Image (cartoon, rainbow, N blue to C red; front, top):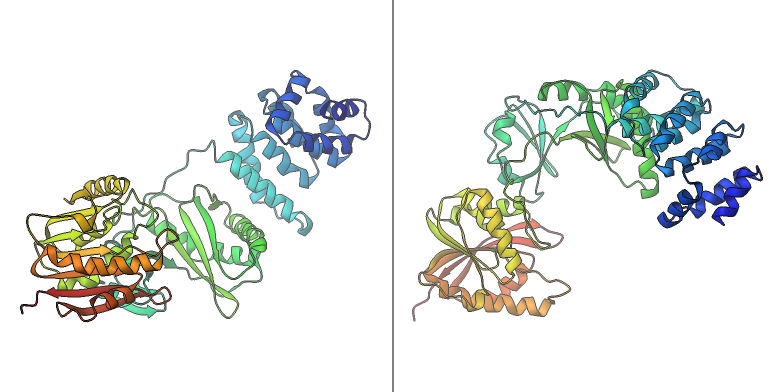
Length: 498
């Protein structure tokens, strides 16, 4: 059918219908190669269609020519793009050219982009102009040397929100050196403290900057974008970075909006922000340095927050390797901070289910430790643990060994671990028995007494396993996630002499 469609186009028969059928037939890469072979480098018939009176013929022709990815077509496409007067076709030309090396035309295309940003479109053309702007930006991003903004706001005392564990906000609050704090449902609002003092705290999940925008009514994405452009957003970025705009961003929408409407909403918002900021903000979801987060409130408005990708993550920079079951570094840090009153300086520490080593690295962060050992039955996890730990600067002895057969010449003071979880591969009864065996085995690694710090999604199994055992005493339990019953348990072991 490919040959028949093309021959009909050459003969001028039902050109639009045959173009559409030809496009459909060329979806597969092999079919496209066959068509290119059929043409033998002669694109004259398709190029002539760029002057057809029917805009839909021109649209299908330019899309087909773009798929040819022939550099010889670029001057033809660029010339037709400049002459094209039908607004909704302009983005198709840009997307077609984007498949080729457009470096020689980058300057002219950038001039076009700047002109569009300063053009007020008629309401019926707004959507099509936004599509052309977006296509131009995507194309030009390949040829522009992006100015990487260096974060320079360490000494500033900006108002920020530290997103924390909802159940244990006070752990983070205790580490904030002064300033003013307001406890929020999912974190802490802080002002009057330099970012340099806040950034090293290991128990917050995210650091966000609240934006002064006025009321953002959720029903109008274009208006939200305009308000963001007129807000404190650009001034804040300028204060915190060397060099000025443009800044590259993406939009994160946290609302109950239906998924099929979300993409269109974000595009309209981002287009309006770009237009209203005169290019100070560029929507570059694949290479962004700032995330604009909009969180829906009960009254139908949004709270606007800024998350920066320009701030180096030094807290958990060591965590380069992980496995599916790995505890997150911030949860490991939270567990160790909660356990700190029961930990001992210079303690000999054992993690019997060490995974990629996160719990042991975070144990070393809260208090100086002596020799630390990590065990895991998975050799891949042990290798990853070694790499992570080397990057952290800590010293840990990792052994690919089952805890239940492990022996050692000298005892430990602490056992800290993220306990194995119930999974599709490890059923509930298997994990229950593992807990019972764990508490039977643990005393062999203590010299009469010791502390166990357990991060567990099955705290009931731990309580059941130590029930009636005089040598174990549950010192403290901390809820981490009430919904999935995750807790940190501090358990004292002391040998009972009879």
